[in-house]
Image 1 (tube, rainbow, N blue to C red):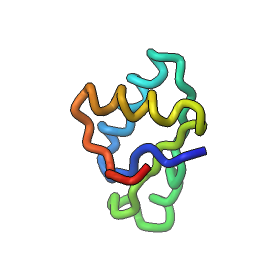
Image 2 (spheres, rainbow, N blue to C red):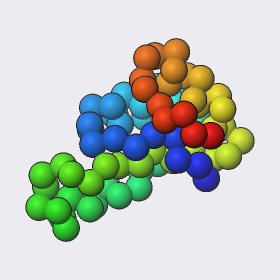
Image 3 (cartoon, helix red, strand yellow):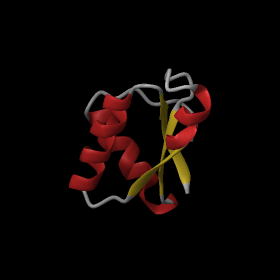
Image 4 (cartoon, rainbow, N blue to C red):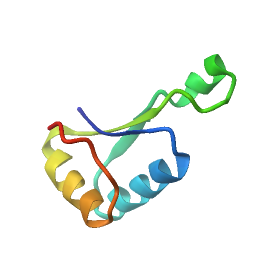
Length: 73
């Protein structure tokens, strides 16, 4: 699994899931329940993960939809 995206914005996470699922790319979030520890103030970013074999295709889909991604691969 590779980290595709890390953000505090829940709308970006939801949009990412919608885009990837439309292309039959499985993805899941890490750190979703960290809000319990932080008091639900949104300081802990969520990470969207994809399988290694879908990573480059998923990055291309998000870049085509103008979602900013880190430069790391």
